[in-house]
Length: 331
Image 1 (tube, rainbow, N blue to C red):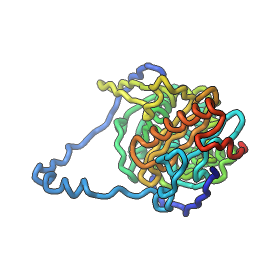
Image 2 (cartoon, rainbow, N blue to C red):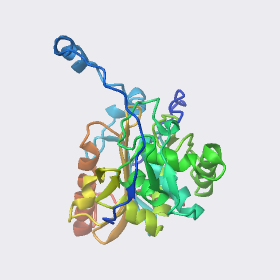
Image 3 (cartoon, rainbow, N blue to C red):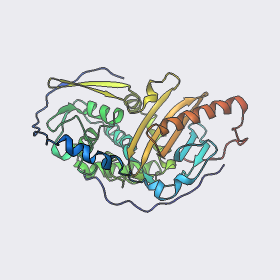
Image 4 (cartoon, rainbow, N blue to C red):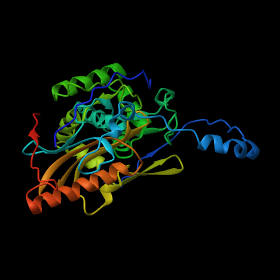
């Protein structure tokens, strides 16, 4: 069961841009009156809106969705590595370079954590942090001020895009310096097929491979702050007179059958559903990467399939197909 290698062309330019502690900060923002849309108009055009086909992912355009695998995974790219021995237990298109969506934020968190900046320093959301590429929503309105620690918490746990962008914007030297730090760290980790252009993952030009992401997950799993924030099940932030409740984007962190050390999810149309994790399964610390999965819950289903497969591997000493380790990786 070897790995299939698929190369992709660069994407078109895109986006320009635990604890139950409660932070009390104020929001100063002005919101215009919403535009009224008649019910007649909505009823007339609802069928048209619903029938619009979703934008295909880069993996789908490259034909990766047509490739099957012994575990019947829905992700077109997958990699399972024993963190201690570096043995590859499962690999599927692990060299394919694809958009990685909000998996980007794991590198964003790495840079912020290693920079040793003042975590209690207040950061204010500005108009610059609004997503003008994907037009994603956010409850952090311009004028919202939170300490850096909570911006990082929301970015890693709840994949808050404005929080992630603000972290990059307020980095010493500004956004350009932050992106340079992201790419420098990638090179340091040996992530030679990885490129970052911004800190949120909204840009399809943020690209990597499963092999590279496994190196990032391994490094992130050794950072106590990243472990804590990415696996935090929920968080509450008091902004003005509003109590904002955020949940983890990965439901597995609340599942008692899972022992997750670090994780991150991601999605944009170009990337499909994505998930990376370091988790202890059958007594082994495993790094799992799932990219370009079709269907909102499919990445979770793939993780469950792998978990059961590895547990079966421990019991039988072989894979369901009778194969053992495929190969080893460096890094």
